[in-house]
Length: 74
Image 1 (cartoon, rainbow, N blue to C red):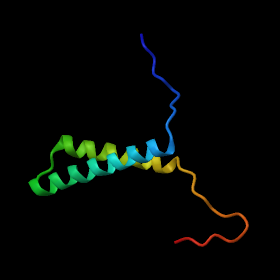
Image 2: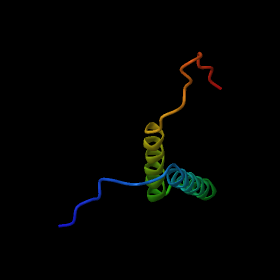
Image 3: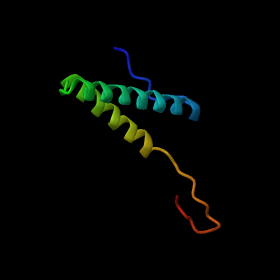
């Protein structure tokens, strides 16, 4: 039985492209649901999965914070 590959070699640009594609797909699905006016169960499930995956990608990022001076967000 085949096994899953547990190591991936993706660059930052690859992950950015994946995120962009997921955001565009999410936007298109949401737009279709708004236009149709009813909730398609499959489209709703897809939107939830995309939203969850984007959240997991976001949580794995390491954001820059300067160490020499106080951090001022914004």
